[in-house]
Image (cartoon, rainbow, N blue to C red; front, side, top):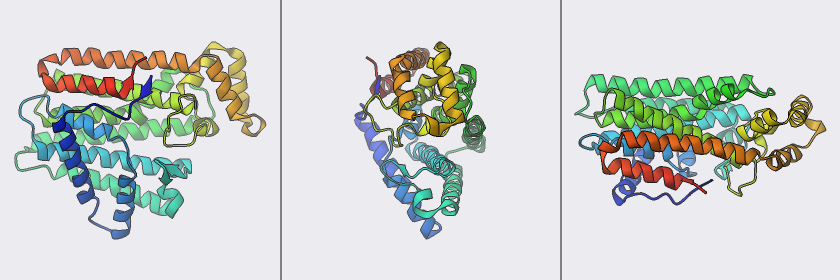
Length: 331
């Protein structure tokens, strides 16, 4: 299973994504000139825009499509995501992301923190501006959904930070990635659905779709970090292991082999005494990627099952289904 950079989208969705880029440029151009220029540099470095894309698609799932407000919601999601990446890079002392120097590398820790904070504020301001047709109750719901997503990201990142150097159980691993990655995909889906006017149990289904999609996405990232797929993950290979973070392929081999688990524990205690590359290659040889890929596939299957329950929503759900198929090439 690989990530597909050529995602199949309808012409109307492509047009909305083009409008999104222009809106992001506009929104990040105001305020402090120095921080604004840094935020724009990050924006222009690329990214798949999967989270705002999910918001746009789910916003068309119920009733009429409100382009202006949907794009504000999508821009808020993407701006908050970029803010969390700036903070992540600062915590990790990361030097590169998406092929350019991180804010931390280019300007230092203080500017990186300020930039991330500024982008978090921008995210909330973009969403709270709403539009003339948005009632206060819906706007409150959307802000709560976005802030809940950020809270879960923080919880997941804190859990991971203080869990460094320890091989987690599967339950701990999944709780962690539900926060650090899946939560914002959940927020993206449910915010889009709420913009469309959806309520009740259907909103819960949309949120569950986002969580399952995000979980599969993080597992896919773990597989890439093993260095065996030839895909550029946007960060140095082996970085997680060197930081004392055990990803799913490594974890599953640890559960399968006591000898390998002991080797990983020794590495975590004395990283300089062993080669991260050797441990990664052994995890690959012992089937870590295949086992993780199987778990990833189960979450993708859950996404399709949820979409079956939303089948009454018509063509938009068909496009979301195509998105899942395009993002994850199932082999």
